[in-house]
Image 1 (cartoon, rainbow, N blue to C red):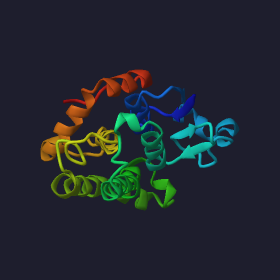
Image 2: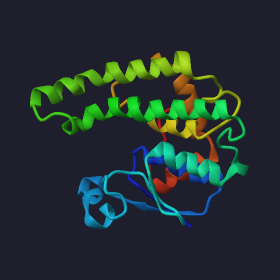
Image 3: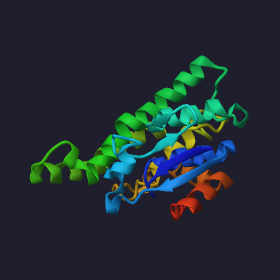
Length: 211
């Protein structure tokens, strides 16, 4: 059985949703970041990075959301969570998820975790002030240029959708007015209505985002 380590309201939600969508046999382990459980020796033995998600598989341990999402899609092809038979479409999926991981998530992290990059208090404050602009610009690019609709890749729901959904649940906290992102808001509502998403949110004890 697969074992997913997560913290509520983190990017691990995307992997949790994908497991539920795939109908995979899995269990979850909740980490309390407020108690610094991600830095305890027991978890560092699983993931030395001290972050989530981490997925224990029969072959070993995987970390990083894009890798875990692809692994789930490939292990459960019957769920149709990735265009595994189309190299170009699969590369487009990887490109989208890589952008979420390397650009969108990093911009978001500047609001709460600027200490990863700087120590100066003025610099930390400046990074935090910049978040509405940088995150907003990233999501406007997604809405206007990258999103095909009604799902990320078009007519086919994929692992890109719960990943985008997860980051879209952070937008209000990042100071973004959802009225300025009608496509993202509608997508977020559509994903939130899926049974697998409701299941994952309930298991994590997370309140669904506002409509």
